[in-house]
Length: 419
Image 1 (cartoon, rainbow, N blue to C red):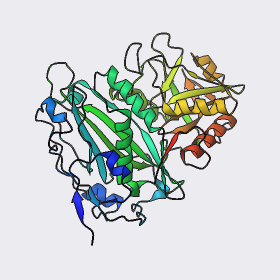
Image 2 (image 1 turned 90 degrees about the vertical axis):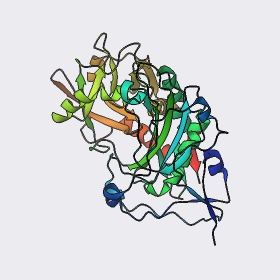
Image 3 (image 1 turned 180 degrees about the vertical axis):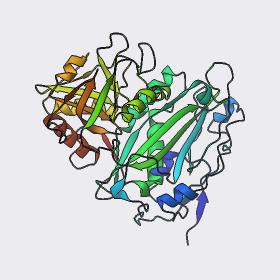
């Protein structure tokens, strides 16, 4: 007979370091479609009431969040059954999973103990900082399932560091790198039945940091919430790994010098929706933005970085405050250099783009996506034979994805294995 106890303040470090316990999830027999129609959200997060600074002290009594994670003191090595969904036809759309992770703090930056709770809706005050003034950040990373059943995370500490940089720009406290990584681990393990089988996709992990406290005048919120949810995903673009088709936007701009284009704040993405929607209505996959000063230098695509290849030399726009420092971008640059390619981070003009041998995009969601054509002021330039990757992008894609999925030795020490 098993004895169990409800966790009253789950600390990810403790949860992950136990080698004699197993996290047991409540029975979840719904299929994905049934869950989308019938899942009942847990009691909402009550964020309307102001909290004192002392409420973020980890030595205070537990917060009023509902606890659902149950820890059994009987070790079990039984394999977790996969969720009942069509793994062969995963797209990049949201599927509700089992658990989310929540951690709160006040402006002084002292985060409370984080906790897992059943996934569901949350409540925010209408005067929450994130709703009124856009004080929010998000991250994106992935978990992969290996053939032996173990789970790999790809460079989660890089996401943690980027969130901390963004939080400083947005006048927000941020979890430490250790808190961030441990929270990601806990959330992934609690939802491990949603990690696709090897080769079928990945578990997309979405950490959020938002001003959840009520504020009326323009000011930093008095309270913040760090939340992580996950969803199984396939390819980001409907084309899969087939070439995508981009249009260069020369009137609307994604970012300005001195602004927030270099951090992953939520407002950056709402700003691209108008141009993106218009482009997709015309049959394009996405939009490539130019700098707002000279209107001739490449910046980035709506949600990914851009690379051009000419005579085997790889060039990408330099990070200068208006371009997001993508983690996949950084990884591709390191992989390319390790494979003997020359990589230049600099200003890249539209003319160079149109004269390139290959063009490709990188990002957490897309990984590496070949560009089949670019349209600029009515002129369309095609790359390759339209069949897929170019020679350079194919090599980089192959090495990076094999690293992410644990198929080759990780000499970069980029992956973190969860058993």
